[in-house]
Length: 159
Image 1 (cartoon, rainbow, N blue to C red):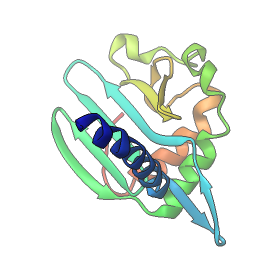
Image 2: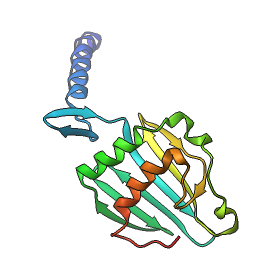
Image 3: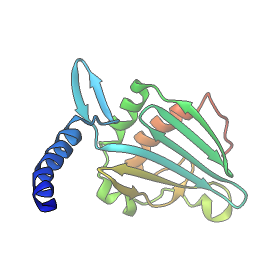
């Protein structure tokens, strides 16, 4: 008797799950000129480290959070700022960022923070090679500049 009930319920449950998954919206959908566009970029992080300081700045649609030695603060990130960041990130060949060469080596002697960019796209994390803060590889300069345009004016970091 219970098998008949189970057999009758299985198709009902499966069809309900299918409808629910189709109704879910995406948090990284950008609406521009009435057209919806889904970005592959979900999150971008800048990590900067030296002996006494560890800072992580995280950009996501709608927010920017900063952690300095474990003290976290968060700010709102406008949709237009996120669009500008995503536009620069989408110009980068993410499969190659780990092999990009740093133009300077100040981080080896504590003259600069050792920085890394982590870009989450399509649920995969792409990590850049380490570079001096303020001097990213040429291929990352535009994105790095766009990220720090959002940081400057709100926080002052020394190099």
